[in-house]
Amino acid sequence: MQMIESGNVAAAIGVKLSKAKVIAAYPITPQTPLTEKLSEFIESGEMEAEYVPVESEHSALAICIAATSAGARSFTATSANGLLYMHEQIQWAAGARLPLVMCVVNRGVGAPWTVWNDHQDSISQRDTGWIQIHANDHQQIIDTVIKSFALAEEMMIPVMVCYDGYLLSHTYMPFDVPESSLVDAFLPPFNPPYSLDPSRPANLNTVTLPDVRPDVRGDMALAYMEIRYLLHKDMLDAIPALSKIDERYQSVFGRGGNPLIEPYLCEDADYIAVSLGSLSYHLRDVVDDLRNEGIKAGVLSVHLYRPFPAQAVAEALCGCKGVVVFEKALSYGYQGTLSSDIKSALYNSTRDRRERPFVLNYILGLGGREIATRDLYDALRFSCTADDPCNEETRWIGLKL
Amino acid sequence: MKKRDYSHKISFSEGGPGDAGKTGSWRILRPVLDPNVCTPAKRNIPSCFICWLYCPDGVVSRDIPPKIDLEYCKGCGICAEECPTKAIVMVDESSFLEGVNKKPCK
Image 1 (tube, chains in turn orange, purple):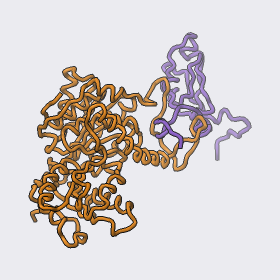
Image 2: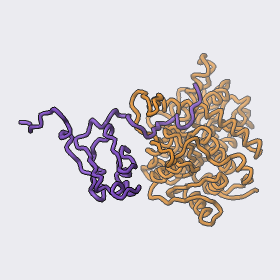
Image 3: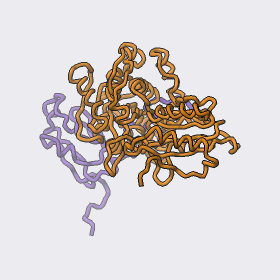
Image 4: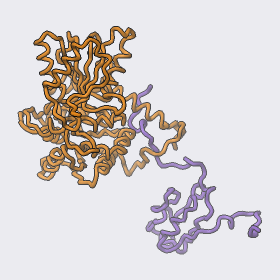
C-alpha cells in the first residue's frame, strides 16, 4: 500500500508491523511524533503492545532492557540529549546482548541548545557496541526498522536506526507500506534462547572478575574480556548477516540491494563524495552537475556505520583520485569521524600509498545550518580541481565568523 | 570456535552453592529455630515459610520444620527478624564451640 506521510510515521508503522510488544519512550524533538503515533496505535487497539510512559530516557531504555530480558520485542526512540541521557543504559543493552531496536532521530546536542538536525548525537554513541544504520528516505526508514529487528535478533545485538531530524522526520514523502502478513513471515515472533523465567531463575550480567572462573555447574564461564571480545566479533559478523537479511527482504518486498553502502555513479568516478544520511542524496544533484561539466564525480552513501563495512568502503573508493567526506558531526580536536574511519579503511586496503586516494573532510550543517546545494557544489568542485588538496585541514562550510 | 548461544555470551549465573566458598564460616550469630513456636512445625502443615522466602542466600528449606543449611548460612538474621512468631533466635556462634576458652578476653 502506498502512503504519503512523515518519516516519523513511517518509523511508527514499521514498529507496528514488526509487532513490538513493549514501547517505552520519552518525547523529545524531533522524535516526538513517532512515539505519539505509537501511543495512538496502542490506545486505539490497532497495535497489541504495552506503552510505558516514563519520566526519562534513562528509564525508557531501562524498561526496554527489562522487557527484552523477559522475552518481549521492545522498541524505543529518542534524539540528541535524550540519547545522551540513555548513555549508561545504551552500553548495558549491548553488553547484555539484548536485541532492542531504537530510532535515533538525529539532532544536534547541547550546549548550546539546538533542536535542529546534525549527526553528533548518534556519532557520540558510536563506540557503545550498538549497530548503527542510517536511513536516507522514508522508504528506507520503514524497511530498515523491520530489517533491524531481524538483524538484532539474529545477532543478539541492539540496533539504532538513525534518520535526519526534520529533513526526514517531519517531511512528507510517498512510501510503500509492506503487507502485514508478509512482514509476519519475514520476522517471526521473538523467541530468544533464554528469557527470564521464574521456573529457571538466573542472574543476568552479574559481576565478572578479571579472569575466567567456573560457574556453579563447574563449567568455565566467560569473564569480562571474553564477553566483550564476542560482542566485537559478532558485530563484525553482523556485516554479512545484514547483507543476507537484506537479500531475504528484497526477495519478499522487492526493495533493497545496498544494505552496507549505496554508490551513485562511483564505478568510473575520479572523485567520490561520501556522506551519511539524507545528505548523500542531496549530493547527487551536485554530482550530476559536475558530470555535465566533464568532472567524473560520484557519491557514496554509508548506510551501515557500525559495524563499519571497511572492506566494501575501500573497494568502492580504491582507484579513484580523491575522496571528499561531508559530515554533520566530528570528533572535536581531530576531524570528522567518518573521515577517520574511511582513512583507516583505505590505509589497510593497499600497501602502495600512491594508489591511495587523498581524503578531504568538510564539516557542515551543524545545529541545522542550511546546506545550500551551491555550497556543496563549490566545495566538491574545489576538491576535484585543486592542485594539492591533501594539505588542507578539515574545512567548514558556511561558517560565518 | 563453537557457536555459543545467547546465554553463553553474557555474564550469566544460576542459583547454586559455593560461588564464594563455604560462607557459613563468616557467621557470628547462628539462627536457632524453636519447633514449638514455628507455625508449620506446630500445626504440621506446610504454611508460613516466611524464613524460606526472605532468606537472601536460599539456605532455608521448605520442610517441617524448616532446615537451615549452616554450611552456607552467613548469619545475617533476616529470618529471625521476619519470623512472625519469633521462632528463630540468633545465638552467639562462640557458644557452640567446644574446647575453647569462653572467658571474656582481657
